Image (cartoon, rainbow, N blue to C red):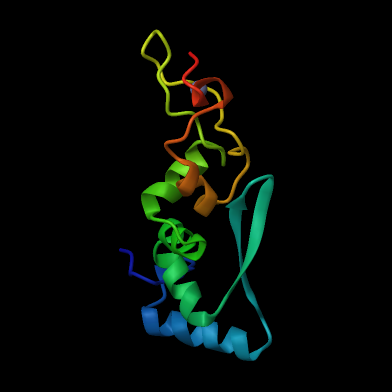
Amino acid sequence: MQYRNGISKGSRYMSSSESRDLLSKMSRSGIHFIASVPAPGGSNSLSLTEDQVVNYLDHPDLFVASHYGVSLGEYLRWKDEEFSVRCSALTAKRARCKHVVTGGSGVSPKCWAELTGQYCDVHENGRA
Ligand SMILES: [Zn+2]
């Protein structure tokens, strides 16, 4: 049995309102909520409010995608392609080019989304 927004506590789950009470108590006690989120070269620390903790726990990937200003699909592909934008060209063997687009190495999700569909140095000028 698992409740949405619940926090595991031993063999049972806290209800949503118990979780909220705990978060409020922690916040009043001076405890800060910080999520470690993927970023090029390591991770970023993302400071969360009580409300954001609840949303984050509900769907971490969706929360971080929204934080970065991209769709969930873009965010997941950005992580999947290790923060770099791959060239959109197909090779002579009809496989996707493995090179990274110009300026597309280790970029933010927003930049990744903007550069998607571009080409590498070789394919940029129609050379193949
Ligand atoms: Zn290419």
